[in-house]
Image (tube, rainbow, N blue to C red; front, side, top):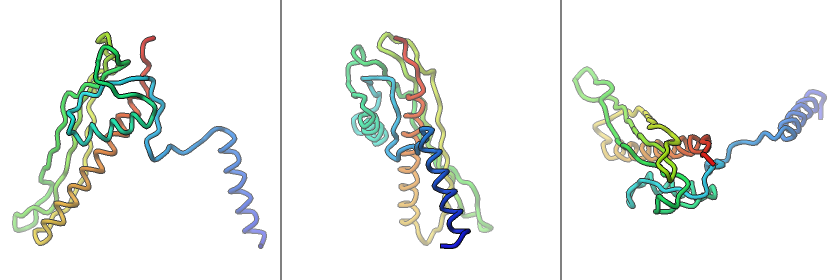
Length: 169
């Protein structure tokens, strides 16, 4: 091992030791968030894919998801959830070349007494997708993947906002 390689390994080792000593840790991919609630009610329908993913992530963080608002520490109320597809650009023949996909979600969080813990909050996610008339099925599948990706991103953003709340004790 030459001197340059040894110095590079030494620098990497020293950096890792310093970061681990200060408590630094990468955020987990499963959306680890320390939620300040023991129990929550989620205002999603039973068949909502967003509700199912959020419910799974909240349970993974040690918070029970229940249905009785009076027994819950907090309730997440869904005010609106919309998906939108807007034409972004056209080609010279006037045909669609690109779309912009929007996923808009508005919610609030209240405690079991009705006190607002988080005012109505909007989260708007946007993705751009090219369009090709000769590959319509593939583009529809890509659109579905982008919406699922936005849904996962939305769940992580909601979890971060919930983890930042300070419930009244």
